[in-house]
Length: 339
Image: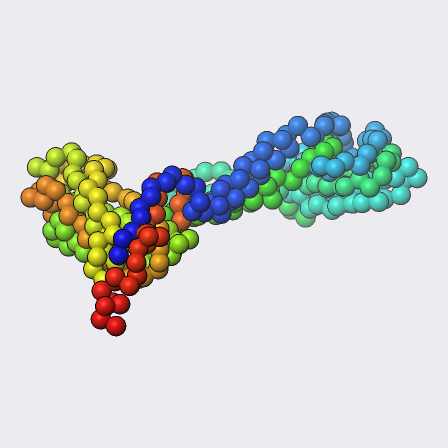
């Protein structure tokens, strides 16, 4: 049956999902970078607070923001082996508490002895914080209250407790952005790896020679067929091998034949590997036979023929379109004669 063959470079079979995932990762990365420019430091000072008392900082004008929130970070400045329970309070213009957060902070240290050896250790949990999203313009005051203070021996202490207080506006919680960046990047990498092996493996034939063959039902006017040829040769092989690919239709008639250079991809002391990939649309969808001849064949130790049906690509590729010639007379087909 006469056929027409047309080779065209096309992006028609590109899988967009890998680029969508990577694009999302890029947007999240830009958001992470841009978040550094939204915040403004309003307060950074140290205060001392008596037990069962509170200290108010200077008033702050709080304004609604499209991006970010008001963040209050408080770090207790404790001696070793002491603890404190403190509360971060946000007061409105009338002195009423509109938001608060309580923290039990502690600091411990000591020495250890084991098998004639000794050393020191220290642990602490001192940092507390509060995030507030403004809904309207208002004047607020940040206050720190000490609810209890003592040491690890069980003694309550009366000395004032020091705190480092930082207030920033427009702060973005980047924990979610980092999670989104990692997740979208992983999805993009998975899509990049999966795209070349997408679809269905129609033929996977490996022989310890240079001329594998296989037959499978593949193709369709809008379906991409990827043919991949991998060769493992010995150290005497030339740097460039040639693979002749022949495709036959369901009746054994040749619809395509071409000799193409194979790409050298890896070489060791005693092995050389070559690869060739080509892409087709075969119309109509039917049974097709694929036959490969690699030359020179003497140094070839192994040849693998892989045909994947309904495949996709990551970049534009050269595609050979094979379909019946519009001038062909179907009545001349051998099957019609026997009918």
